[in-house]
Image 1 (cartoon, rainbow, N blue to C red):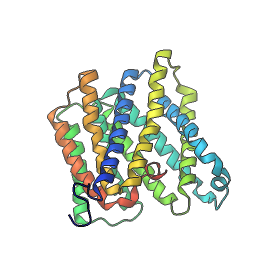
Image 2: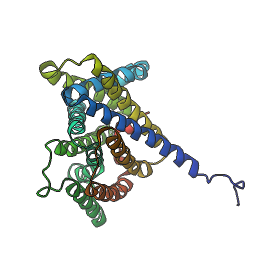
Image 3: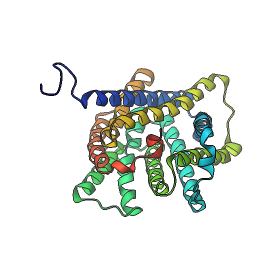
Length: 306
């Protein structure tokens, strides 16, 4: 082989294996979060879980941000962007809470694949808000993504659990947060976006927490810690994968979450996703592959930040 030692890995093969490893680690963390939320059984409000998760995010981020606090707080600060910061914080808090609510009540695989439709909503919102142009094939893939959602939910054929639309809502809110990130990135550094987003998520989360919080039992504290720590760990793993490979390669790997969630649901909760969940997942997967490749620049700041 010219330019390569015999038996050596191709130049692009090993980095992709490493990226796949990081995405597998992220998917495992998300599966563990789903299991933890399910074991909590909905006794704790999902807004409480999102609030605890935001506390962990701020605490874990603070040592990284603190040495650069002056630059983040003062250098070139655009006060007019505070509305976007506030909107982003509200969207991320709402997305987390909606996703946790869906995990508590519907099969883990179904909640996961519905949440994985985020790229579909990003593509639509990019057209509406950012005025991006989409080809006929792009619109076909967007339509295919929504068809996948319909196949999974089967409205009119199956009774839709009230929690199922919350998984779709979470994808929409996270997608909207990605668009606000793109708008903010025109004037704001990534470190400032990450910092203020976490602070504002915490502030928004404190409002329902003050009025509707339920005191955790001691037996629930380890599960809450798993959600908080692994939520941050999953984002770190995705960031590592994106540091190695393009979003066009890493994005579709999010679908790894679905079989892992299905396996966890089967082993621990005797959940057996029917064939239509798998068919819908395949349809969504095809849609995500195309949309991620055509929207490489629209990845969320949490995934792009170091």
